[in-house]
Amino acid sequence: MPVIETTAGPAWRKRTTGQSMVRWFGWLLGLAAFLWCWVRISESTTWFFVWDAPRIASDIFTRATPPRWSYMDSLWLPIWDTINIATLGTMAALVMAVPVAFLAASNTTPSRVFVRPLALLIIVATRSINSLIWALLLIAIIGPGVFAGICAIAIRSIGFCAKLLYEAIEEIDRSQVEAITATGGSRWQVMAFGIVPQIAPAFAGIAVFRWDINIRESTVLGLVGAGGIGLQLQASLNTLAWPQVSLILLVILFAVVISEWVSAKVRGAII
Image 1 (cartoon, helix red, strand yellow):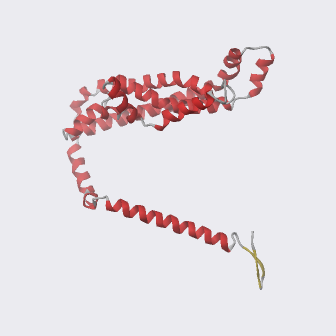
Image 2 (cartoon, one colour):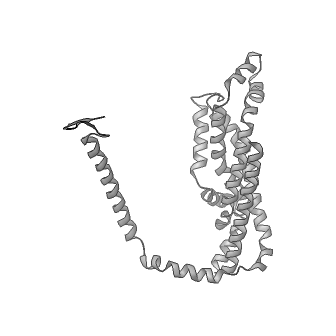
Image 3 (cartoon, one colour):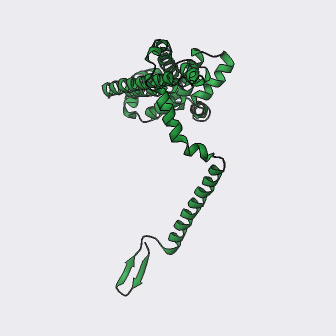
């Protein structure tokens, strides 16, 4: 820390003059980048619609209230499909994520040179593409419907579940593994009695957490034709049936709140 001599004695400063200049230069660069981005955004923005947005929002809210409660009979099956998409997709993802996680963990992979990079590539690839993009690709391959939504949710969830699970595998207590190995346990016995019991709580927590996320994601898959309540939402938006839209949004909100409550209870029981 620099020291400056003054008439009152040495004065301590947090940064030297050069460090302060570099810091201020960084702030100026950040401000210049912000102003440049703002100009580019302003050039491509129709500000008339932005200033008129409160009036439009108020008009839509007036048209959407009260919700069309009689339309609820048409939403029971779609919301059930949405829950099934999230649940079955999560279950399929967990089945595929477990072996990928064991192959990606540095202490359980058969090969750190060949197998582990491949497993990590699968984790990154499945996590980097949004579920809507997966749904669009799968609809083009296997056609629209609930099955495409299940596959999209499953593929999207593999990387998430496998990443958290392989991190839990790498953080296990190695003394238990060494104890089973010292008694002559095979590789599978070490995994079954030394590793799996330690990661079981983490696995359950990951499964519930991902299911909670998938409930949210599956509600919009219908917008691209992958089944669920999103189909009714898209149809209502296309016909400007705002009372139906408000009811669908309330149903989605209720489903998300229930899933959040269930996941919180399950995680609390596990922990």
